[in-house]
Image (cartoon, rainbow, N blue to C red; front, side):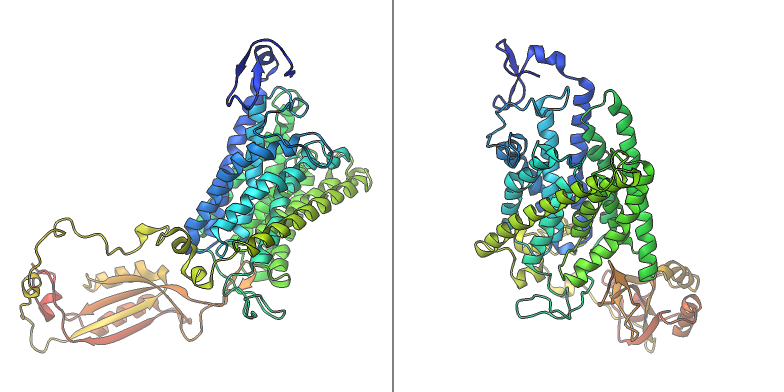
Length: 591
């Protein structure tokens, strides 16, 4: 496309963006442009996936804060990348592009065939936002919102565009034939290394390590404690969203749906999917062997690690190569997360460092091994492996140094971390003034009954009349049963069969003298072993307590520790509020 025409033109989008001349419409490809725009929409939707993964893998008291950070990553990154980032990434030069405010320059040399500049701009914008949003999970639950917004601006404006220029903008790594098709290094490892630096500087969450110094830093002999996320369901939903969108992330990076790219796109879909599935299966088996049970959250991370690892070489490896990369990614994610957690003592709540940093680096290097053209396995020698390794080291060094400077300056000026009191209370209330992101699940005292809200107050003896019709000598007994949740249905049926129609069921947490079962979360033992139980409260008078006890024991007994407990206590009196009946009569259902 030649933008030096002197003929009449029609503006496309923002007048400051670019002009597309009538003659140029003949050069555009509807298929290529549509493919790029669809892929851009899919990559944008990855923000929802990241938000769900990070929210689910952290505690409920910080859910709103996580959502806001993911929202701001894209919202801050979009105008920032348009203002300066795109020009730095795709301008001329081997080390850095150029300063081109609001994308006014001529980018014909870097535009894909048949794709107009606006389509290419939005495609690259969503990739930039992906790199930025990775960090929010690693620094979750203790980072100031204002500090995070400043980081998000800087990575979108300078740090990501410069290393991206080296790889995709015609820079020095591109001249060396460094191959990173869709961004294992350019996007994911950049986010992963930034996550490592940020999480190390901000420090671990309170309670993450059993031994810390006066500044809250883990000591050399400290051991990590698991801090489970509040919703694996949300985490799993996020992983499936990301997996789905990754077909646009990798497949859309052909930026064409013509000629040989039609076949290439199908092949990329296959290698992308195969690596993710293989990594998930092998992660499951590895955790099954190491932790005695398959770890759910680690297996979800395994699928993401497979997706990250295959991203660099998805266009140049065979299905067999993809399968092998998936296997390696599984080992990288399990042992990598353990290494970060236990050896480096860096607190990463969602595993972003392992998923994006380590798996991204591994996948990029493995491309040099399994590439059909030039890979080590196919007789290409070590040349491609060397170039891939050099690229990984160069980008890692660039991001590590610049992010260290950025986070250190932020920490010394506005501060990077919230106070201990704010962290304990939760980021939702302290940073955003919301009691909970799950307000409907909380007991609210602010909403009154519409029928009585404006009623005149009356004396207590009128509002709640008490008529003493109790039967002298009628004994009332409270029976409290605490047992496992999976026995509630059978227990309810047994109680109904002996005439117990009124009961109260409460979900509770607790443990007995055995301190609960030993559990693992992401390779670390869960030290607070509060197990989910149900508490059933019954008041009986007409039915003998022993009858209830016998029925309950018949349902609960297995002979193993943890069958449950039954507590029996005397009740002095019962008052039915509606009728004022007391004692025996208050417990009867007769009208």
